[in-house]
Amino acid sequence: STFAEVVRRSGKPVVLVANKAEARGAQSGMYDAFQLGLGEPCPISAEHGQGMPDLRDAIVELLGEERVFADEKEEEAEDEVFTPKVVGELIGDDIEDPDEEEIPAYDATKPMRIAIVGRPNAGKSTLINTMLGEDRLLTGPEAGITRDSISVDWEWRDRKIKLFDTAGLRRKSRVQEKLEKLSVADGLRAIRFAEVVIIVLDATIPFEKQDLQIADLIIREGRAPIIAFNKWDLIEDRQMVLADLYEKTARLLPQVRGLRAVPISGERGQGIDKLMENVVKTHEIWNRRVSTGRLNRWLAGVIAHQPPPAVSGRRLKVKYMTQVKTRPPGFVVSCSRPDAMPQSYVRYLINGLRETFDMPGVPIRLSLRTSDNPFAGRAKKKK
Image (cartoon, rainbow, N blue to C red; front, side, top):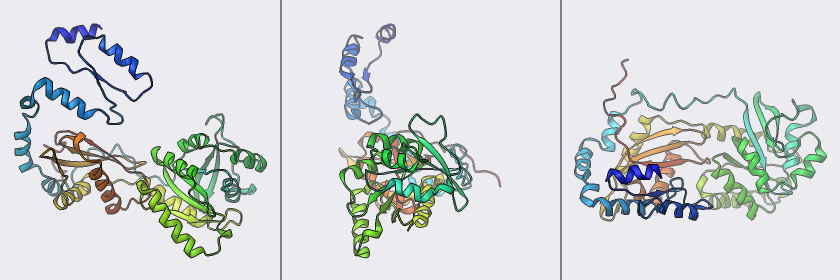
C-alpha cells in the first residue's frame, strides 16, 4: 500500500497489471489489487502471453494513440537503414556473437542422460534389461536423485550413459512389477532428469491416448524424444506397417517434425544399436548452436520471400534473430508488436529453422520481443 501511495502521489498515468492470472487463487488477488485504489487491474499471464492485447488497449486508452505510437515514424526511418537484408550483410561469423560464451559447446565426454518411458505392457522393462544385462550393470542405484528415481551407469560404444527410471533397475522382478504400473505422473519425474527420452510403443497397438500424453509431456518439458516401436518380431508385413507408423508419427506429433522412430525387439535384442545411434544423433541436435550471423542471413531471405502479414493495416517489422539457449534450441526474434505476431508465422519460422539448420525431431523454442538493435556500434574483430 505504501508503494501504491507513492504511485498515486506521482500524478503519472497508471495502468495496474495483475500478473499470473492463470494461477489458482488469481481471482482473490484481483480483489486485493482493486483495494490499492489505482483503478481496475488488467489481468495478464506474462508466462503464457495472455492478456497482452488488453494491456496494450489500456495503455492506448490512457495515453492516446499519438503518444503511444510516436515512434512509428522513427521506426519507418530506421527500417531504411536496419532491414534484415542489411543485417544479413553486416553480421558475419567474424563479428562477435553476444551469446557465444553463454552457450556451452557440445561435450561428448559427459554422460548422456536417457529415460525410457511408455505405457504399461509396452516392454520397457524387457528393453532395459536387454540393454544392461546383468554383467553390464556398472554401478548400483545412485543416491540423492529422488526417493523413487534411480540412475544406472551404462556404456554404449565407449559413450558414457546414465539411464533413468522411476523404478529399481537392479532386480528384474521389481523392474517388471513397478514399471508396468508406471503412470504418466511417474514418467514425468524420470523425464525431468533426462536429456533424451525413449518412448517405447507397442508396435502391435501404437499411439494409444497415453502414448500421446507421454510424448506431449516430453515435448513440453523440452526434452529430446525418440520413439522405439517395440515387439517388432510380432509384425508380419513389416514394410507396410513401418510406412504406416512413420505417417502416424508425422501426423500425430507435428510439433517435433522429423522425430526419429526405430523398430526394435527388446526381447530379442534386435535394433538396439540402431536405436542408440539415433539417440546420440538426436542428443547432438538437441545441443545444436547456430551463429547469429548465419541466423540473420537466413532471416533476411525468409522475410524477402515471405514477410509477416499486416495486422490491422499495419505491417509487422522483424529486425533480427539470435539463439539464446540450447537443450532444446531456443531463439529470440526482435520485432515490432510481438503480441500481434500471428502464431502461424511463428510456426513458419520454426519450421524454416528446423529445415535450414538440420534440427529434426527436437522441440524448438522461439520467443518474440521488442528491443533495440544489439549490434549497433559493434565493431568487427581484428584478425
